[in-house]
Image (cartoon, rainbow, N blue to C red; front, side):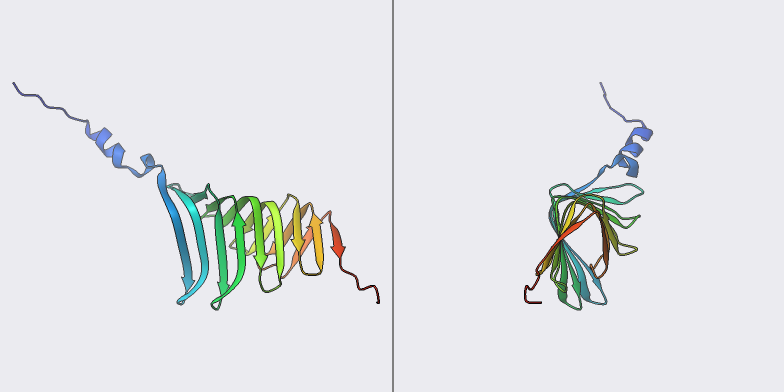
Length: 167
């Protein structure tokens, strides 16, 4: 007596096709991006999930830290509790305890939500935002800024400034 089992060819081919693979999960990820041998971005995340879609989406469900460099010097640090990167759109969404520290200007931004458009090098948020410098604290309902914070506009805000009483 002989027995055999078989799978229809269509089922076997579907198992290996790209649209049946949901993505890739990686733990303890450290990612470097460089240009001409110089590191310009470093990303650390406890977990990265990459979805195999047309949009090339990477999710950071346990948070992430990004360090940006210029000519070998760390210029900016970004932290968030959750993030998503849309590769095709060159957009990063960051949520929860978003902190951006600019070492050149000694400014730190705090918010709960943050959108970074990498192609235009612009940042924006429509949630409460606070920027702290050595001599002032500015809070507002929304913000539009260049990614290096050299220019920014805040809306519906208030400020606390250090004033020299002798002047």
